[in-house]
Image (cartoon, rainbow, N blue to C red; front, side):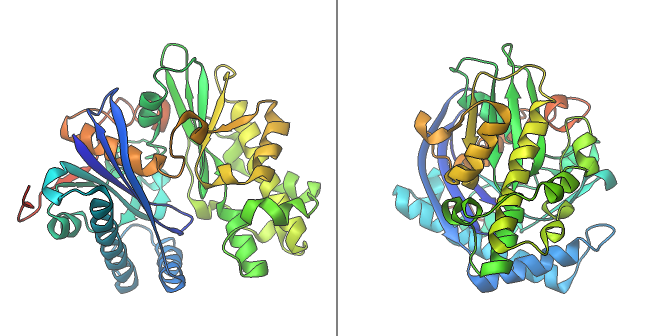
Length: 367
């Protein structure tokens, strides 16, 4: 099947759109990928909607959040149209879209998670069946609703020597451990780029620490780092997940711009080291996807703490920027086939379960 995956992550940098061919099991072929950056105004609107959503006891209708949801849907429709143009395909040739939406609040402790974006409107605008709301069923069943990518990581690494681990360094970091017998264990490890991006933007106006240059010029404040590692999240057993906003840059206030960047980067690395203590067996390799793989300072700090060199997945011929979007395309196909996307070892759900809501377009696109 041909499937498009759409991902808008907690870094609020833009939409990733990927086209793959897959059977939803072992066969995966990457075809096309593109990123669609958000404008500064769009980022500000989404950040404001997220801050508001986090104040609610449960998801509910709200004008600001609804406006942000419309923005998300419009942007994703545009991303699909551009991806199809890049690939030289018509909408009718694509079997399904996996639409993650934008997470504005993630509260599995309250049995809900909230991703905005209208799956039906996306299906109607593109003419392609769309699977959306991929996390809610897992959370309602008692799971963490995250991470969901492990099933895709397992497919991608089927021919590699195990045990191994795949680390995704997005706004939040998560790790997938794949045992010699294919056993999956996965969980969020802590913030990755999210806090660093927020710090750099607040201190310098830049969107992120390009190449880790600001962190490289700074010094890690060990007292701040120790205090941040005292967060109760790190004492929780796996599987576990978090919201990007469960951690803030406040502990680093008062540090210089460079020292703050260095300390927050060290916090990401130390969080990964804490995660390694929860793995059943030490992995032979650590493969790294997500934007953080472009930060050599972060990778060096991780290596120093775990004694294993992180390997950007691009060296395997994968597109490290496309993995998450591809994963949601893969999960959409699994939804159509009734195959599970989350498991006890990945989200803590009681048993393997499928997820997502299928939206059929009111008028199917012409093939």
